[in-house]
Amino acid sequence: MSTYAPPPLTYLSGADVAELCADLPVVDLVHDTLLAFARQDAGIAPETALRWTTPTGAAARSLVLPAWTGDVHGCKIINASLGNHRFGLPRAGGLIVLNDPETAQPVCLLEGGLISALRTAGVSLAAVRAVRELAEPTSVAVLGCGRQAEVHLDLLATHCPALETVALHDLDPARAASLAERQRARLEADVRVAPSARAAVEQAQLTIAVTTTTEPYVALDWVPEGAVFVNVSLDDAAEDLLLGCEHLFVDNWDLVVDDTHRLLGVLSRSGRVTGPGSPAPEGGRAVDADLPTLLAGAHRRRVGPSDRVVVNPFGMGVHDIALTSAVRSRAAGRGLTLPR
Image 1 (tube, rainbow, N blue to C red):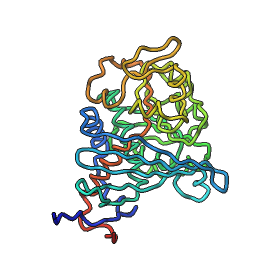
Image 2 (image 1 turned 30 degrees about the vertical axis):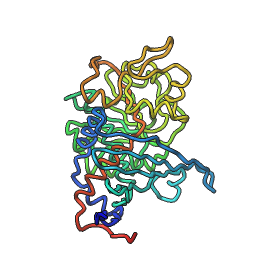
Image 3 (image 1 turned 135 degrees about the vertical axis):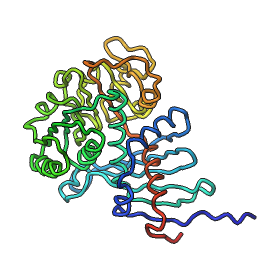
Image 4 (image 1 turned 90 degrees about the vertical axis):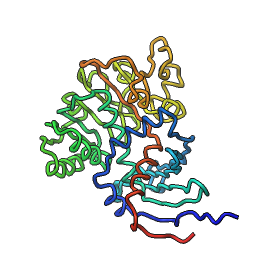
């Protein structure tokens, strides 16, 4: 009988993760993971969701995202409640589990909220970098001013040194003002609070939507020529923007099709939007490419300087596993060893 034993089970707290994520090359890790996915050296398994209404009436859900990259296998459990702001809590939080490749026993358990936010922002910036190549945005709008907004802006500060103006908008003006104040201390750009979502979008070369809305509202005529709209949250982009933009990219078409809540999934099931490589339906459109194909250089249709681009990432758990693996590799001697 073999004497192989898996490593001990280690728990890394939110504070541990925050320290270990300092200077983590998030965008490069996301970029490399998308390329690995294109080569089939990384993958995802079907996601599942549990949804409910909280005792105070807020929509809540728990998502389970299994994935692998190389010989690293794991799962993210990410939970969210739209009412968390009332308690001063982030909308989303959860756990990420890495498993021993030989025995499949869990070997590392991490607080997952920060990694989830980091990988989301990393996907946004990797996509923008692929679409616009060396052209950095000088004007950015951010819709929604929670944790995702802050993490996106932190990465923008590192990767977009040419940034000159940042317009923030949130339905809660106090939240927008608070984020603007914090970012003024970090960014050399002019950071201001926009009076409306439209006012923010109309002046921006790059808009990042990170709200909690379930009602589409950003129309095609809000988005300037040559601008990129990254639809991180559920449904900020209206139907005419999704159908009328010159280029539409997703991270994974199968995830979009399977979703019953987001507008792009609804449009796909109604036959108005088809997947990458498929003929566009009459009166509709086809998605131009997924992000692994785009970053691998296999998408041949050029993005012109005046073209409006929408990036609509669903959220692939493989990025969480890749970032978590990188964090664990830095964690020697850190964390709490848990008994099995």
